[in-house]
Length: 156
Image 1: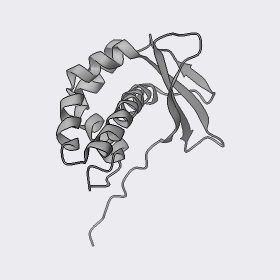
Image 2: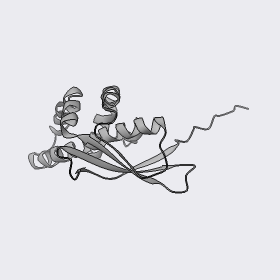
Image 3: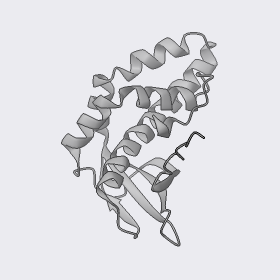
Image 4: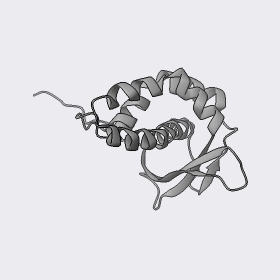
C-alpha cells in the first residue's frame, strides 16, 4: 500500500478586498486592502498594504510590465486594448502589494486590523518582485482574461 502525503494547507487565506486607492493625507501613495484569515483564528482581519507610486513605477520598469502587457494586448481591438491598459495599472499595483503582504505573512501576522506603510519592507519588496516577476505578470494577464490557464496567481 502506498502512502500518499496530504498537501499542506496554507496557513492564511487571503482575498483582495479593494484597491488600489489613494491614501488620504499621503500624496503619491496607493493602498490595497486585503482580508486575511489564519486557520487558527475565529475571524479574519483587514490589512491595508501601501506602496508609493514612484516605487511602483520603478518596479514596473524592472519587470518590464508595460512591454509584457503590450505584447499580450496586441491581439485585442483598439477599444478593448485601451480599457485593458487602464486596468493593467491597477492590477499591477494589486500584484505588487500582494507580494508585500506575503512578506508580512511569512514573518507572522498579528490578529488585528493593520496598515503596512509604503516605507516598510522596501528592499525586501524589491527582491520579492524581482524573484516573483512571473507571478506578477501572470496575475495581471489572468485578471485581464488574456491567459486561458486559470491557475490561481496567488499560488505562483
